[in-house]
Structures are given as structure tokens and as C-alpha cells.
Image (cartoon, rainbow, N blue to C red; front, side):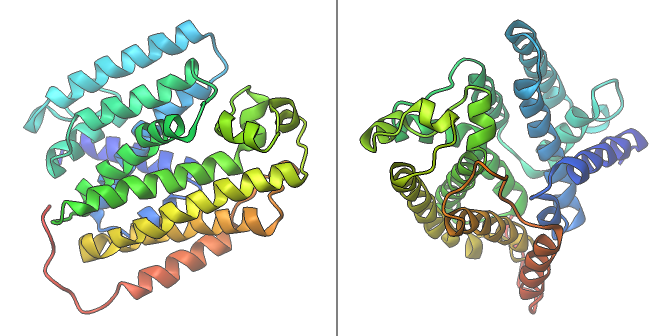
Length: 299
């Protein structure tokens, strides 16, 4: 590995350590080559999210997304010694190397960009099918990238990775209701809000009543169903990488449970886990994977 590529991966690790509050501890459980690839993936996704969330004109955001596509295309063309030996931004140099090393399909990255960019124009979802399609692009596709790095043999792993991505994104949506509403983004399906007689104005005012609790119970139970199905992913993953998705699964499911336990009050505070709780989850699940080794799966 060239010194430039080492620098690129180190940059991605710094991004993950600083920004990936719920992910970083899970990433640390991975063997070094896989961990570096996941850092690169996270840094790329973080960059896309930052473009969408930055306070700047939509036209400038579109320009930056276009530039991101161009850089992605250019970086994925590089092979061998070309990677890391030029002026590519570090996220793209590392991503190009990781993509080649683990055989990650290129179109996954384009789908991530399309999903995040859709936030510029689509701020409402008529029904869950629309929301599910959005969750697939911004979260499930990331899961599909990750399992290419983790390693798997059974193609069913893809289905369960998709389910886990949806579960985690639904949890993000419920946790961030207040912040999203302040930016005029509502991710709760509108037809379900109408079913319980709960309006956009009610949401923006942070009204918690029986209508809201019934609406939230529906959302929480749906997310739990996806978490339940996605547990089938773990035995299909290379044993050496299994702790990472397990930690993420338990951490995000714990946030969902906390939302439920606090009576769905997502307005008075941002619900999450403490650093100690994240370390406890990581330590417990990582220790549980330190069993006699079995042959690694592909990749």
C-alpha cells in the first residue's frame, strides 16, 4: 500500500471516529482490511449526507452532488498503482481501493447518492411504500456494500441486509422527528398520520397525545419487525466480521426501545445511547464472537 493510500485510509478513520457516534465502536471489531474498507464507505456516505444537510442554496448542492458523481466515476476507473497516487480526495482514493479489494458493485454508490440527493426535493412520503424505497437507497444499499466487505456465501444475506438497513433508518427517522420537522422534512407516512388524525402542524408543535402515541406505536412495531427479520443475517456473515452488524443491530434496536420506554417523547430530548452503553454493547457482543475459529467465507 502506498503512503498516499495510507494517508487516505487514515483520513477516513478520523472522519468515522469524529462523526460515526453509533457506528465507530462496531467498526473497531472488524479485522484491519475490512475495517479500513468500512471506514472508507462511511466517509463517502458522510460526505454525501453533509452536502444534503449543509446550509447552502439547492443549486450549489446539486453542483456538489454532480461533482461527487464525477469524482466517483473517475476514482473507480483507477486500478493497481494508480489508486492513491494522484490528487483524488482521500475518501475517493480509499473507496476505490476498498471497492477493488472486496468486489463491491459500483452501482451501489450511485444509488446512495441518488437517495441522499432526493432529500433536496422530496420532503414528504405519501405512504410506507414510498418511505421504504427511500430507506432502501440511503440505508439498505449501504448494508449491501457492507456485507460485500464482511463476506458471505448465501445470497439470502442480501435480503436480510436490506431489512436491517430499513430497520436502522426507521429508527433514525423516529429519533430525529423534531430536527427533521424544523427543516420542513417529514418522514412519517402522510396516510398514516391522516389515519390517526395527527397533522403536520401537530408534529411541528411537538404535540404528544393519544393520536401521536398510536401513530408512533405503529412506526415502532414496524421497525421491530424489520429488526426481527434481519437477525437472520448474522450466521450468514463471515465469523470474523459478525460482531460488527450485531453491535449495530443491538445499538439501534436499543435506541428504538428507549423511544418506546420514554412514551415516544422525541421532542424534549434527542434519544440515544451513552458512550458507556455503546462500549458495553460492543464488548459483550465482540467477546461472544471470540470462539474457536471456523474457515472464513469468501472475500
